Amino acid sequence: MRASNQSAGSDFTLGSLFSGSGPRQLLFSLVAAVFLLGLLGNATLLCLIRLDARLHTPMYFLLSQLSLLDVGFPLVTIPKMASDFLRGGGTISWGACAAQIFFLTLMGVAEGVLLALMSYDRYVAVCRPLQYPVLMRRRVCLLMAGASWLAGVLNASVQTSVTFHFPYCASRRVDHFFCEVPALLRLSCQDTSAYQLALSTSGVLILLLPLSLIAASYGHVLAAVLRMRSEEARNKAFTTCSSHLTVVGLFYGAAVFMYMVPGAYHSPQQDNVVSLFYSLVTPTLNPLIYSLRNREVQMALIKVLGRAGHRPKW
Image (cartoon, rainbow, N blue to C red; front, top):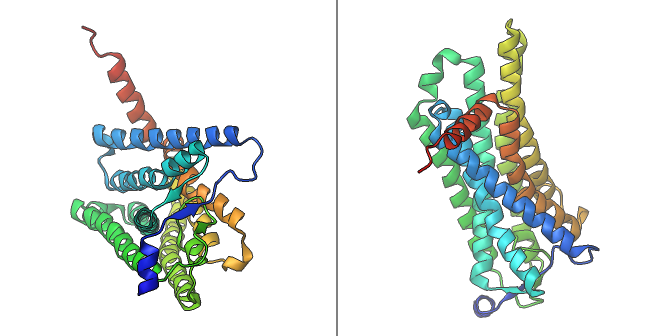
């Protein structure tokens, strides 16, 4: 307990994302540009869903929740990373480090559950269209969104409290550009092997259960789409579902590498790249994927831009 209390009063030193890189300023500018593009894309998608009545449907309600998570992911990590880079290095307090782990875990688990529930929405829309208004009524959508956020909060609370229960009396340098559980556990002066095993096991379950629902949902969707006689309906179903499957692949690909592949098989540098991918690149790509592949979003954007262009000037 004394060692843990001493840990709570100390700061951690974060590693640099650009250490050992050549054109550091160029890479930093690229990361900053992607960060701003992601915020703009997700904010635009949220506004379109809010303003256009045609997007007031269960699918777009769930998509708005995904955009909220995609706004939060980079905000937790990138501003701190940018501040440290501009200052030539920096530290993070015990409380701020715990906050990073809590919010990143919350949003990661919530997004995984939400993507699985979005696949169920597509299953109902394609395979049981006549029952869709009942099965995906507003109350059910709110319960889905609440369940994804609640799962994130519960998992984040447990992981953060257990992680910071260990004493950190060894090196204070985190070999990562933000606080993440695997990187932090390497600094503990107490044996964390049992917790790391439990963490890996729970990570497998947290990933496999939603993936199983996604696979089952899209198995039924694919069979239903192949039976459709209308080429227009078939193309519309393929377009909508392929967008969601692309997002699922981007998110779960990085998550599987980080939490299902044993740490001995990937280096801290690889962890940095994969963490940057799921915390910045994927949230930036998601709104682009849905807008470029979705005619309804494109029409809503044209409609909003048309309104702005015809607004009377005083």
